[in-house]
Length: 322
Image 1 (cartoon, one colour):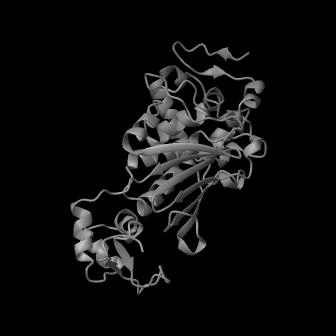
Image 2 (tube, rainbow, N blue to C red; image 1 turned 135 degrees about the horizontal axis):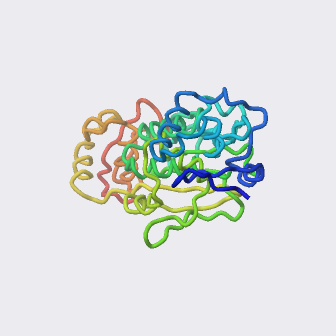
Image 3 (cartoon, one colour; image 1 turned 60 degrees about the vertical axis):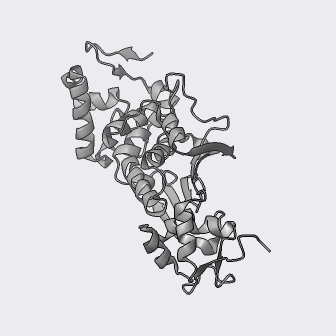
């Protein structure tokens, strides 16, 4: 049995080998050494823990790593590698993000705007993913996007069953899908009435990421996402998908203005500039495509939707498909 450390209010525990085999996030990476861990990032975290719990400063760095679930007898744990190694994918290639932006509501190779493979420790993966989503889905609240990226990274299944399965982020014109491997019986985290999650997968990784990323992990993030966007989940073949959906615009001043502007055929760039929108992709997804679907706008080159010569013009037939 693990023994409580004798350091006043210290929350650290003396671990035995069984502990490191009992949880995927703290299993030992036998062919790795502590010199693979970033010393500056590691020192920052240990200093933080010492300030949080002064009693921890009374033991050596090696003992601190042991008590915090980061190493055992000089061998780093999976959590340590994923958070403090510059390139953990050298040991765990599955722990990466494959991201894509698709200029359509369905996956179509010819509509892919960009594909990107993201590598590095958890913090780097998070920052790269947030930047990618901001580039191609700027209309989604950053708080909601960040929360789902964190959930996918921190709470993914780390057991042998998920080996070779990366995280995926796919941005469609009307939604973002966040995919991560999960256990066969996984369900989305259920929040209690107070908003706290009764059990958090990979608690060691989550608690360290909270410090390194300076983000709150209070079990209330899903409630926040629900308050900001339409969110739904599905599980397919031991992969959990969280989907943020972009609400379609209602008829209103902005829509009417665009239809009036497009009485003369307009290019994608002209439309984005008219709407004062920073990205053409967002202008198309948020404003143009709903009007195309309603047949209120039409393409001048319907057989070549991606052509640089494509123009969009108001359909004066009244919006009824014939």
